[in-house]
Every structure is written in C-alpha cells, then in structure tokens.
Image (cartoon, rainbow, N blue to C red; front, side, top):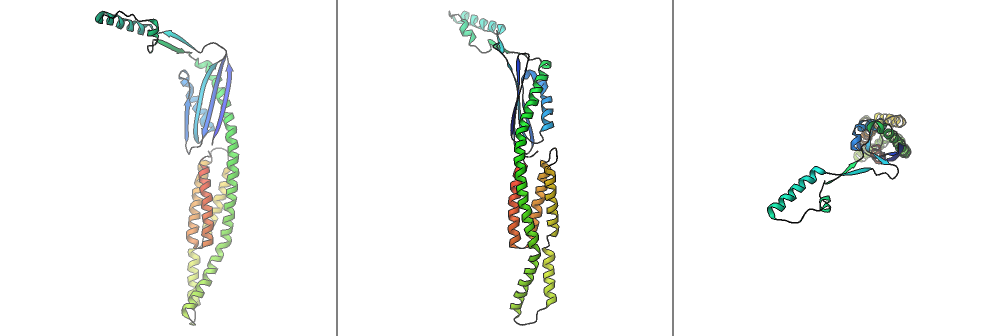
Length: 289
C-alpha cells in the first residue's frame, strides 16, 4: 500500500531526519539510502522495515542536518597533488621554454586540488537518534497506509456482497435449468415423432444425464466456503495478501467450472459478472500485505 512518513530527532545540535515512501508492489522490495559513515545501521533499518511491511516497494532515507550556522563540511588543500602538478609545470618550462608561471587561481580549478571533507558522524552517538527518527517516520507512514487499507477493505466488502448476490441468483436458477430442459426436450421430440407414442423412460434418462452433467452444487458450496474464508481472513492480523490472492484464484476456478457445467445463458451471464468483480479484486489484493 502507498504511504509516506517523516520523522525527526534533534540531539546535540544535529537534526536526524528519516523519510519513508511506500508504493504498491506484489513483492517486498526494500531500498535504503543512508550516509556512508552510517552503513552499519542499514541492517537495523531493514529489520525494522521487515517487521512492519510484508509487501510493497519501500524507499527509506536517513540524513543528518546540523542546526545553526556552523558549516557542515571543511575544505583542505591536497598538498601532494599540488606538488605533483608543480613538478610537471617546472618540467614544461625547462623542456619547452615556457615562461608563464602557474597561478594559485589556476591550481584551484584543477580537480581534487581542493578537497571537501564532510563531517564524520559518530556511529554510536547517531544510532539512537537516527532509529528514533526512523520509528517516528514508520508510525507516520503506517497511519497513511492504514487509511488506505480501510478504503480497500470497504471496496472488498462491497464487491464480495455483489458476488454473494450473484451466487444467490445462480442457486435459485440452477434447479430450473433441468426442468426447462425437460420441457424443451419433450416438445422437440413430440414435434419430431408427430403423434407416435413418446418413450417416457428414455426421456427421463436424457433429463437425468443432463441433471448429472450440469449439477453445480459442489461448486456453489466451495464458492460459499471460499467467500466465507475471504471475509474472515480480511480481519486477521499480520500479512494476509497472499492468502486472499489464493482464495481469489480458487473462486475464479469454481466460477469457470459453474459456467461450463450449467449450460444456461442466465447462469453464464452471472458468472461473467462474478469474474469481472474477481478480476478487480485480484488487481486490488496485490496491494495488500
């Protein structure tokens, strides 16, 4: 699920800032951006993320900002490099008779002559305030993700109710399929025989064959069971996305079987509506942990 969180902790004149962004993804993908001097904290950060997030792409960023006007970096002259350049300039003058001398401004424009030294962070001093800021960011992100989860839950329940209504219509329609088939078959045979006595036993046998072939009782029972499990698992704690995804696959399979066995346009129409809702649920459930 999507979310954003930011946390700050100000300690000893430094502002420790943590940001978390989460977007939908079928799998868990953790990306941690952290200062080089604090790479040892990456495992702690990943462990905290794994405890809270089971699915999705997560980008976590940690940075420190010094409070006040004191600069956050120092600069120094790269003396060995300058000496090497001066030797080259001296050799150029001797071999090619160049009189122009190197100026300080020219040397400063050469790469790496002036080194910018960022302030080194003390790992032990930074660990606690960084992790506290990170936990605040996770709490903030969880609030946004929870709100999205509530919206997804409402959407799930609405679609499940629609599917249940379709199943109810199919259950009411299923017994009529065989009866209507028997009537149609009788009329067709009577038109073909034109007054010849109808073999009732043979007619009942054909109707029985259709009734057995088109019986979808098992599929309806399993479908009801899957829907019940789906609604129950929705309210479980922890990661439920993959379980819900599996149940949707099973519901789709049962619906296809009902459509194939029923041989009835009204039932087929209802199964099409069910499949459309299942597809919407399948797309949405991939955002659920």
